[in-house]
Length: 331
Image (tube, rainbow, N blue to C red; front, top):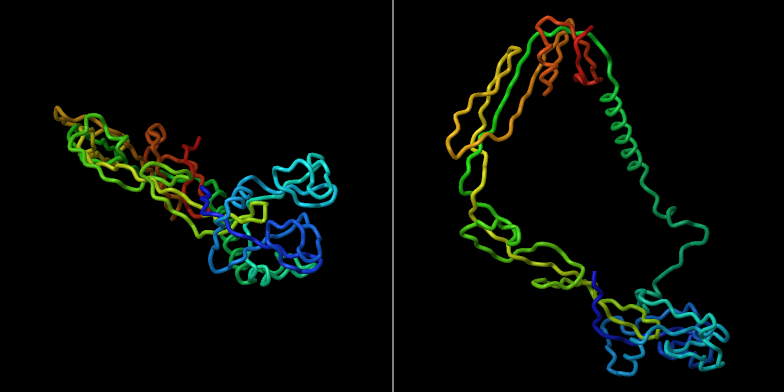
């Protein structure tokens, strides 16, 4: 996300000793002379609109960098200063630059803010409804029970009563196909290409053919007593999305063969010159009975299926919902 600068506005700070409100760039209280404290909070002056600064000197000061806090007398100095303007102390000896970039509150927001009650954690103030906790707990318990039922299995011996199989082959043809893609993904042999701009992705940085989308302006602390009005912006990038015609292999038919014996076969194909065989798929079903209970086992393993002679005994692993997890011939 890009932070876009709109200009600079004046800030104020309140003296912690006499409560006098002072212009942001003034480093000492205009009433009692106390220096700006290290943790001074600057506030936005005009809460309704941005009163942008025209003074070039103030703008250059804001752009130069944050003030430096003198480690000897606590006086604020410009970022370009090497010696404290009040005591002459060497600012390179642990002089601290003010933190910058944090959002500046308005004077109204500062007045309305109430500190948290001592000894009461924020989490205590945001207690969750007991009913909501009960619902969440019930959902968790239900999921655990279902998982246990699916994972827990019982072994039993059952008899094969019936078998079924289905084999299918996809037939593909080579011919013209209408498709769409971004311009840099269009095949070289495409014909009849028609493109128009469409949204493709959002970028954090400015791009060609991008629409700038910005949030509400707000003021950030430059560390100088002057605030910078900024907006957080992203960029919706548009690109050419195209429709075209190209030659490609596409599925035109699925030929299927089925049976109820142990001799599965692939369907016979009669391919035209512009056709070819595509993917194959095979599904085998073995039906079992144990007393009055019946079970159905589906697999794609041909070797397992070929052992399923009618009347043969198999060991099944059954989950708690009655589903067959695995099956193998009994020894």
